[in-house]
Amino acid sequence: MANCLVVGLGMGQQYKKWLEDLSLVVITVDPNPDKKADFTDLTKCFKKYNNFVLTYIGTPNYTHESIARQVAPYSKCVIIEKPGLENSNAWKKLVEDFPETRMSMVKNNQHRLELSGFRDLVTISKEINIIWSRKKGIPFADWFKNKELAFGGVSRDLMPHLLSYYTKLADINKGSIIHTDKVDLNKTGIDDFAFIQLLNDNKIWNFTANWQNLTEDRHYIEFVMNSNKIKFELGDYVTAFGGCPAYAYHIMIDKALKNIDNDKFWDEEFKQDFWIHQQLEKI
Image (cartoon, rainbow, N blue to C red; front, side):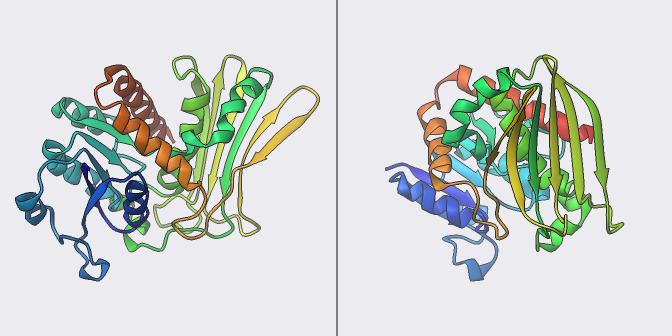
């Protein structure tokens, strides 16, 4: 059985379970001794294990790039938690600097089974609304309240998920942003509300991410036709580990492993990840 590496035992606790569900052996690294990881730093880990089929990075945003560069020489595939790196140039350089290692940003929502029928609805819609709005859902981690460490607020927390629905359902070569907005309710430099409006093939796409609407949690995709609307609830979470069903993560991981040697697959992953990074820079 192949070894996998999980760095960061926040969301990484769940990835450990999902990888083990796929009969993979998992090595864990986290600097916090209370997390009871196998190792508290990567240097110690690499002295014993230095050949991983897949590495998941689920550490604070500002550490993603440095950790990715440390693990890449020892990993066939590296999956980095959203929002990836600080900007699109950093992402492009990381991929170019490690051509022998496959890189991907987490896009778990693309593998929900309900998405299989959404493309047909897109073709007959004039507007598509994708909403993820929480009653009060600002992450508790202190680093996420620091713009320099998180790279932003809800625009980096929830918006990447919304854009990954789009990259699955639409041709990203055609669309263009026509409006963006963000609001910092608490004057902290961290945005609590973010919005992107995009035009693609005469269809309007609206992406709305909100950390604190103070009314209710909402997560859905809505297809607006000429005479009616169809809305699909996608679930929400308040704690870190709910929302998207486990099978979607299983599928995402399994596809990455089965396509390790498929250049076309990874070219498409890069195209989507780079595009998502570019849109986040425009908000």
